[in-house]
Structure formats: C-alpha cells, structure tokens
Length: 399
Image (cartoon, rainbow, N blue to C red; front, side, top):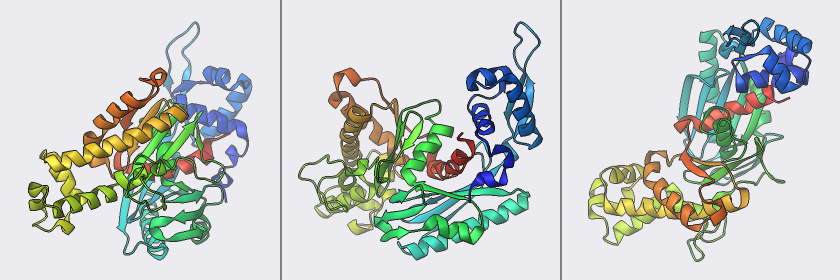
C-alpha cells in the first residue's frame, strides 16, 4: 500500500516534481517552476491548478516585481497531509503526529518492559493508537506511518533484518503494522531516518552530501550522497559504530575488538565509569550515587559534567577522541559537507564535540581540512521520529 493511492493527483511524476520544488524552494512563482523543472508553462499552470484544488498548494501573496506584473507565489498547505513518525529504540518507542512542515502536533513515548520484539510490538500499538485518537480529535486523516528502528533494516520491504539489542531477526515489522492499521508504512534504520529528517527539516537543509551520526547505547550513521540516502548493497552502509578506533580495545557486541561503539557508546562510558569508581577514582562522582558504583547512570555523568567533575570530563573527552578518529575515516572516504551528531548523547554533546573537532583537524588529510563542519543535529531529541515521518514524505514527494 502506497501513500500515493489516496492522492490520485500525484499518481504521475510531474505533479510530484512540482510539489517537491515548491517544498524545497517555496514560496515560488509559476515561471520559476517552469525553469527549474523544464516543464512547459501551460503544463505548470494545469498541474498547479489541480494541486490547489486538492488542497495541497496555496497561493501565497505576490512576489517582487520584475519587468511585468508581480508574480503570484506558491507554497505548500502545511495541514494538507498528516503522518506519524515512530522511533523504535532499544529501551523505548516514541511517536509523533506531524504536518507537511514537520510541525509536531502530538507526541507519546512508551518505555519498553523488556528488550524484545513482543515489548516493541506492544509499545508501537500503544503509541500509534494514542496518536490516531489525537488525530481524530483534531479531525485530520493520517496518511501514512514511518518507522525508524534500531538495527539493520531492509528499507524496501520494511523488514527488521537484525536488531541486536532486541534479539530480533527477520521480523516483517512494516507488513504487520500495515495490516493492523490499513495505512501505508515506510521503514528504515534509525540513523538513516535521522539523516533524512535533518536533510529535509534540520541542520542538513540545502546539502547534497551529509553524514548524520547517532550516538546512544549503540552508534550508527546515515549517509546522504548527492541528496539521497545511501543504504549499501545489503542495507549495512553507515555502520560507523563498528569502525575500529582502539586496536586492542574491549570486545564489541559484534564480536570484534575496539569498535567505536565498544568505547564511545553511552553504555560503554557508564560501564567504564563504574569500573573506575570501584578502583577508588572519582570520589565526588561516587557521592552522587549514594556510594554505590553500580548505581551510576548516564544522568550522573551528565550531572558530573555540568559541575565540572574531573573524572566525568575526562570520560567525555575520551569519547570525543574516539569519535573524532572514526569521523576522520568517514571524512576521508565520503568527503561530506557536514557531519551532524545526535541521539541520546545530546545532553553532553557540548563536552564531546570540541575534542572530536580537534582530532579531526589533526588527523584528516591536509587537503580536506576545513571542508567538513561538525555540528549537533538541528531537530534535537525528536530527530529520529521526525526522520521516520520524513520517510513517508519522501514517498510522497519523490518524482
């Protein structure tokens, strides 16, 4: 089931091309659309008239005056289409209801009872049911559901190939959700969704080459090349978490040693911090846990950084070093214009990025130095869920 089935005006590629140009460049006039698309002005007029009558496009006042009369500008109608974005992480499921501008109208989060697929399915059902009820209260139709999921995802068939934290393999998630709700479902890996959302609505707008890195209990990245997501031949592209950064480092969940994820994920940092506390280091940090090293959490490491705790600052500095080294490899291979960092790491990102940038400056090829900016995501903690919703918009707008 495709979202286009419910929008007959978009069955052909030309209306989708025009709609896409209005999204990217609007407000825009008809003459500019003709120049950008190569379509005849009479074709532009006919299609725009149809899009206006269907409530997808609106006339948005007059543009600047040229040689003739002022042109009438066109823009999208934000409330014309509403979709859901569902983010499936290893410990929670979150969801949002958005319009065409990715304005968040409602949201819900469900903490997983267990780290397994039955709990994920329970969480998705509760979140989707809640958002559908909110949509009914707003008297809007939900046109599709986007799902961004932890692990390796077949984004063509909507199958969870492998989600290590959930112990899931070959689960037809999209088909199950589509059958239950009779709505179009698009699905991808959470880091890919993060990258797509940032490209359309966040700090990646206007870029053709972008890397978005999601740092949490696992680490992955979404790769944008020439304005399009790159998934690789087996949906494995972007696994920056499994780039080796410490040759004789700790064993990773993937079985290798010294992967970025094994030393720079939140889980890895918390584990190391607990070990250091047991060795007698960081007495000030230990006081935050009531004297129990095993009670240490990510929240304590956030608090420690906020107060300038020496051990905590050292730990986040090390994360920056490891992350920077991995990013050097990605820059040398992909040469992105910008790298965006997001995920659960965001509350401490300002303690991590300076060191990461320093390592990139020192270790990257001289000819590439200064060509890639490294920033945090623009969509904040909602970046993955917005990206999930963008998966549906992508199906709608792509010609």
